[in-house]
Image 1: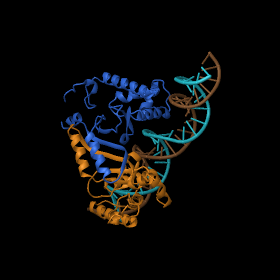
Image 2: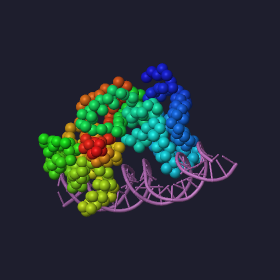
Image 3: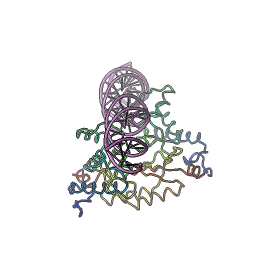
Image 4: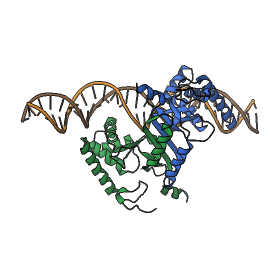
Length: 168
Length: 168
DNA sequence: AAGCGTAATGTTATACAGTATCATTTGCAG
DNA sequence: CTGCAAATGATACTGTATAACATTACGCTT
């Protein structure tokens, strides 16, 4: 599999991109967006965001909690759930319902629902930004007079890399 | 809103269809399918299937459990989860991930993933059998070399009836 | 700089969802 | 009727998420 041209904006399924830079960029964007919205990216919130960016795999609330606890943060469930709620509100993270887990949003700022591809083998999840898909969903549904307010679209299977592995 | 032509096969959002008949039909089909597959539709399993058919709204495992308990069935969680597992395997029920709840399958027998429209106001959920949607999902995704094994597509919002209500 | 209101965090407890494990019973093929 | 496999019973536990209330920190006004 080829390495994407821009290492800071690579696919989650690209195992070799410059992840340090990738996280750094994400944090910069997050700070900018929060300032812009008059929202406070406090230490816990920032740290949670970093953690869910660090692994390109969705993380559960209690995994995050454990890490936070190691780092001296308060370690009761509400702490992490509040931080996550904030990040979801600001459009900085997504929730992966089918995994009870959370992941950083790869296109923060623009209002959107995430459509996700989740690899059952390596656990990575990638956001699928497809306007045409959104369009065809909307079309199907409005035909029936249904008003869509939120969408959960999560496809699970094998990412290109793992698919290759398994065929050996 | 008009009453659908076939009362036994109405939309979940049709509040006035012949629901007794609707359940009856579902149970007949279920029995036939199980016999066909050499699977045993035991009393708990049958009752759970009836319960999730009765309300056109997805029911949580513990709601089901409570009802079973009232009716003298064993009332420990594994009982209901086993029954649900069986029904999912047989393609008689679906799981609605975003609600942690379960609903009867309206097209049992044919292998398919359910795409769901869920009304946040009345709680009904309806299966959206859209081949074209499935097609466009598959297309988007195979472009990226991803192999889809299972799909979760759940759209939440307002059903036609509730939409009307709210506009008053 | 002091005081004040709101937002954020701390703390405890509990609700809700799902599974592991092992014992017991039931249904059915031989 | 016997012996195996499938189904159920029973207990305990793991994991996910929120309610409720106390306390602290922040930023604005005066």
